Structure formats: structure tokens, C-alpha cells
Amino acid sequence: MINIPSNIINGQAVKGAETPFTVIDPATGEGFAECSATSRAQLDEAVAAATEAFKTWQHTPDAELQAILHKIADKIEANAAELAEIVVREQGKPMALAQMEVGGAVAWTRYAAEQEIPVKVIEDSPERLVELHRKPVGVVGSITPWNWPLMIAVWHVMPALRTGNTVVIKPSSMTPFNTLRLVELINEVVPAGVINSMSAERGIGSAMSGHPGINKIVFTGSTPTGQSIMRNAADNLKRLTLELGGNDAGIVLEDADLDKLAPAIFQTSFLNMGQTCAALKRLYVHESQYDELCQRLSGIAQEQKVGGGLEEGVTFGPVQNKDQLELVKELVEDARNQGANILCGGEQLPGAGYFYPPTIVAGVDNSARIVQEEQFGPVLPVVKYSDLDEAIAMANATDVGLGGSVWGSDIERARKVASQLECGTTWINNHAEVLPHCPFGGCKMSGFGVEFGEEGLLEYTQVQLLNISRG
Ligand code: NAD
Image (cartoon, rainbow, N blue to C red):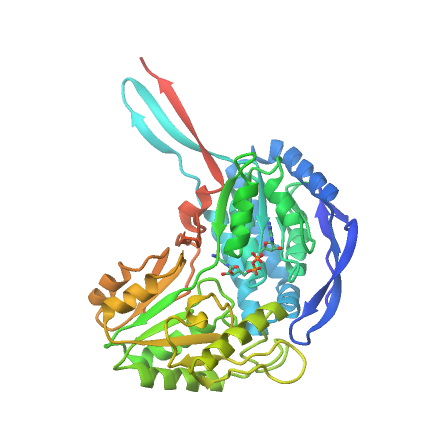
């Protein structure tokens, strides 16, 4: 049994003013707890608290901000078991993966703590000294999705706090508790109002994106929601970082070493049951390797133990929610009806919960919906190609561009192919790897702005030029 955390506004635990909503455990399909729902008036209170706290928080000396972030990391570490259990209950992933998510949250927090905010000297001459400084933007609104809820909250919150901003965060209503608990823990370390939490089923995210007191929105989620946020944000010209959906392609070249690469292709496609923004979602395989690779992927899929995330030995959890499950089922059925060959999986498991085993779809045409749409679930469509230029064209023929990969032994050749992919990150012989020091973001309709590294940190700042005349 997990303890249900509270919303925090201005350092105080508050009860949501709206009717609570039910949070579902995807392993049972049943509600397991009620979450308090905050109102528009409470959003105003949270923004007012964050605005007030910003007046002093923005002047916190750098060394103090760094020490505070390390204290937050200590708190996450000390409460790791509880946070991991919350993630499993509401998100569904197997415990080992939830523990990795909590470990990642600690690592990313410590990385942000150690980051430096640069001052760039633009001119140092007898006439003048010109320096480019970075200042916080003010109140940051963070809106997060349900797939890696704790990790993504940390990705938003830590660089915001590190650069002297204050925060109002709203998690997905499907996975709210990990974030509410995180905000409780952070409030044990920071002054009142520095970070505040909202939770509601609908409306609050939209109210945040239009709120005149919020200066920036950092959003991770689907492209249509990102578009809505961008429209709402126009009124007070909010700064935006939009990490949106993708439909990442991987291209397997003739010389790929399948002994080595097949397990990595499987792992990076089905990470978090495929519910990862930059998971490999469409695979283009040269005809000389096609049958062999499909068989190997199907073999690995069938070795997975599918079950509830709290069960011993489970390697593959449920789909997080019913809508996502229904979309996956619909897209696989569509491919089946068009004559695709479902090598394994392909049916929801009987019984309670949203279980759908890892599914490899072979013999599928590039035009099928399962290839063209972001299925965001445990399915990998594998498309055969004979001409490399054609494979590159198919990989690029989409309006999104988050990540892409090339798999082969000749690295120089793979590099040439990677350079032709239209996406924010290209991997060679890997996919879906994100690192705290490597900027990550999408192009085309996968959004703009980056997270991580110095570039990611600086998204939470605005520039101020200092020009000292020496004339
Ligand atoms: P979603 O867009 O439905 O919801 C994301 C968040 O936005 C939730 O908190 C939701 O309550 C809120 N929201 C919904 N409507 C809103 C509105 N009109 N205004 C403001 N906020 C609103 O996305 P999801 O289903 O939770 O997540 C899955 C999607 O997220 C996939 O498309 C996936 O690719 C994408 N994603 C992208 C990244 C990335 O880094 N690029 C990472 C993870 C997930």
C-alpha cells in the first residue's frame, strides 16, 4: 500500500478543491486510489506563490543552489523504494525498470547540481567589455506525460531550479502520485512557493499554458497537445520547450552483425513496453538480413515474461492505459487485415489488466498505419528494403523527427546514412539512449528546444548583455 501524497501550494499540503479522480493500476485495470483535483483558483494561488518566491529564489548564490539540488537528490535516494513502488502501481512498468527510473532521477538531479551557468565574454578591448549573462525566466510551468513520469518531471524541474526559476508542475492524471510525492520531498529542502504541484484530469494544463503569470512552459507529450499549448502561450509570449511525439525509424544495413545487434534492436524498440518517445518504432531491414532478423526478434520477444510489475521475474509489463491499448490493437488488426505476418504476440492477453505481449509485425507494407502512425506500444513493424536510398526516403517521409538509427559494421558508411536522417538525434548501432550531458530534442513536428547538457540548461534562462564602456 502506498501513502497518497498531497498537492503542495506555497509550501503547504492542500486538498484539491475539485472532485477527486480515480487512478488506475494498469496491471489490474482497476482504480487503486483517488487523487485530489486542483481548481483554476488553486492554480492562481500556486502561480502567485511561485511569483513571490521567485523574488528571492532568483538571487540564491550559485553554490547554494548546487547544494540544494544535491540535498534533493539525497531525498530521492532516501525514498527510492517508495517512489519506485508508486511508479509501478500507476505506470505499470516492471519493478527493475521503475528502480532504474528512480536511479536516473537521482543521477540527473546530481548532474544538474554540478552544471555551470556560463558567462560569455564577447569583447574585451580598450573600448569596452561586453559580457553575455544568463538570468532565470521566472515562473516555469511543467506539464508531463505518463510514460516515464518521475524521470520526465526531474528533467523539467531540476534545470529550472538550478537556474533560479520557480516551478508549477502538473503531471498526467494517469500517473500523478510520483510527481506529487517528488514535490513533497523537494519542499522539505526549498523555501515555500519555489515548487508547487497541480493535479487534475483536464483543463489545468490548458489553463497553465494560457496563464499570464507563467513565463515558460516545458512540455513533454503528444504533438496535438504541444500545438494547443503553443497557441495558448502566445498571449504573454511564453518561452517554450516542446518535446513531442515521434515515430523513430531504424535502418539495418547488409553488414549488420545480428548476433550483436538483434538484442539491442529489441531492447531499444520495446523499452518501457514501447512507450518511450524515442523508442525505435519502425525498422527498415535490407532484404539479405530480413528473415533472419525477424526470426531473432521474434525469439527474443517470446522469451519475455509478461505480467504485473510487482511480480517476481516479470520483464514485460502492461500497456499503461486502455486508450493506448485499444490503439495498439487497432493498428495491429489493420496490419493483419492487409496481409502482414504477425510473428509473435498480436493479441491482448486474457484476464484483467492491459497486457499485450511484445509483437513483431513482418511482411508489412510501408504504407500501413502501424508504420505510419506512432503506435507508442509493444509492437515493432519490420519493413523490407532492397535499395538504401529508398529506405532513407521511407524513414524521412514523416512529419515528425525525434530520433533515428543506423545499424551496420562499416561505421563510415553508417555515418553517411545517419547524416541523411531528418531527426534530432541519430544513433549508430543503438537507439533511445539519452544522457544527462547530451542535448536531446526533436525537429519537424517532434517539437523544438532541447533538454540536457549546457544547451538544455540554458533553455531555462534568458540572456542579458552587459556592455561596459572603457572609452
Ligand atoms: P498528452 O499530450 O496526451 O499529455 C501530456 C500532458 O499534457 C498530460 O499531463 C496531460 O494532462 C496534459 N494535457 C492534455 N491536454 C492538454 C492541453 N490542451 N493543454 C495543456 N496540457 C494538456 O501525451 P501523453 O499521452 O501523456 O504522452 C504520450 C506522448 O508523449 C507520445 O506522443 C510521446 O511520443 C510523447 N512523449 C514525447 C517525449 C519527448 O521527449 N519528445 C517524451 C515522452 C513522451
